Image (tube, rainbow, N blue to C red; front, side):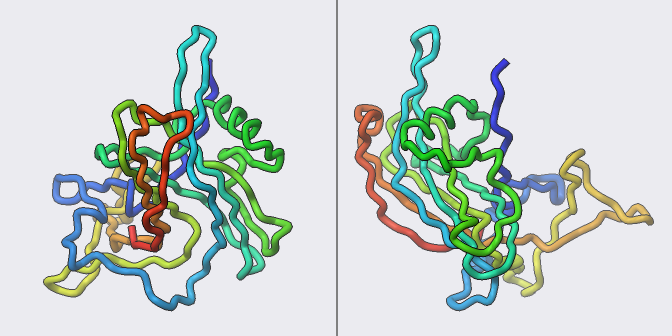
Length: 239
């Protein structure tokens, strides 16, 4: 049986779908004018996140079949605080509308192939990365985000990097100015939590400051071995 890398949790506001009034509700459902924006100046903690341009790798199997993957190496450093908890949450959205979570369901052999390809013995497996990150360059962590290449031609994709900022904001109802409330869901059972009186527990719908990297990738199906790729925008958003 193949050993799989565990899912890297995405920012709750991006991937956690909560039940509200009998339907799925997430931060993206909020009206556009209710969506918060990052502060120009913030006192929240942040981590230094350096990344390489995404590239592709081919993994050949024993039966001769080949699977292609994107990979993006990165280095994260804590310069601001004595200790922070680093939990990378990296999500990719391509122009075909597909959304995938980096490293989710990716065999460990792919990580090992990438590490050998880039010749970086210090690269940590995505399994090892989450945890306490102490202050200083000597405690920096290097790892990689890996996701399958879409079988269809993809001309652009976006990479959302969560877990590197501490800034959060609630989504406000534009009609009332009050936070939009959603049920508290038990992550183990998927059931809505209740208080001792049996009443549903509610919480404000939160967004998290997230790094957004937008790329152009013309003709990726024809040039998988050496894809043309261009960073067209880097900015922070609330997701």
